[in-house]
Image 1 (cartoon, rainbow, N blue to C red):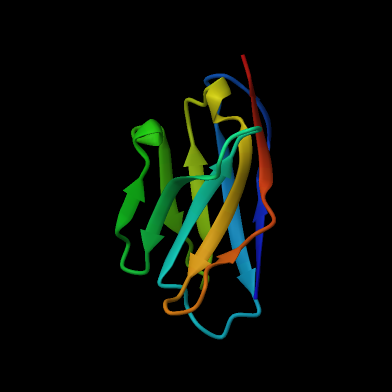
Image 2: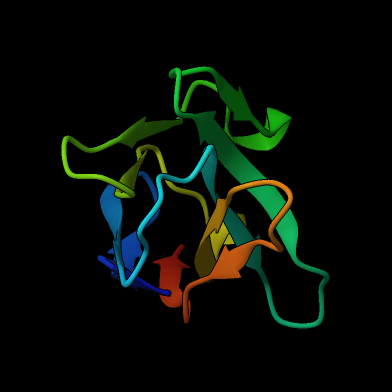
Length: 115
């Protein structure tokens, strides 16, 4: 099973980016998909998750700015990021979980927000 994230890049503060994640090789549907991020020198942190039923969970620091959604294709997820701030600069990782299996991680996509 492989998760492939895309959509990262360089954007000015206040701008927007949309991250996408697609999965290959899975014969099942992830119960939960989501995004984490890791900034230089910091621990990886949760950004947002969404269940197969559409229930979302967003970190407080992105509420009102980011939106997570699942695509029509199985095991795809997107993260719409608006009003980006320099502190949003990080490598963003998509993840998929199907308990009791261990979570799967994508390779990460770099988001850089300039001030």
